Image (cartoon, rainbow, N blue to C red):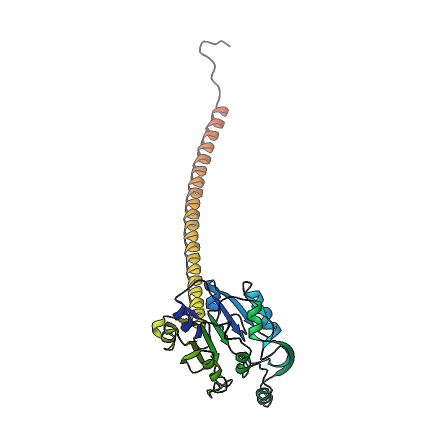
Length: 306
């Protein structure tokens, strides 16, 4: 498979769902429809789901790329309302509702942070509005994970797997201690921490807990999207080179055929010139003989008298 996710999260999920061509996901903090997307692989297989992305431009990109999905340009929290989104324009995936975290961004001159007022809804409300079983839920909200988890109704909506980003943005420092007990209380167990995310499965789901317990590895037979793109580019270049080589051979063959035809035409022209020269000589000889005969004295018939 081709992995589009930042840390091969889609590979682990694909291992559990055995290449199923139908399913349903909820992607909170969906961001780009392709780059670092945990759900693109599944959308391409035929899955459909809900994308939650408060940045308007990214939400619009998701709608265009994923017409089969529901895309909501909102943020999720503990209750409905509005909030200020600190949109990091020049760093994908870093935008946050966390004011304290945003202040650290603003201290970095390299980051361009713009404040945008966004609608806030709860995860429970979203799933009530769009009901149905959820195979996996992904939460990547840069510091607001607890708010999203608190805004869920884990009794009525129980995804089989929940993947939550569990480190501080751009850091290896763990950030799950504040909300991990909420997942445990909801009846989930952590199957794996992959260095970036914590993968939760329902406590009684032995298959999911076992299959998600090992990080993505060579036995999953996956290729990262950028590697696949490089390979595709090389194959396209090789195909283009082959087309050029074949066009060159065709041109050379055409040139050879044309050269042979020109040689044949030159030979025919030379032969024609020779035939014409011989014909002219014959004509000249005949004309000379005719003149000779016309100028010769005529004899009188025998027996004629003067």
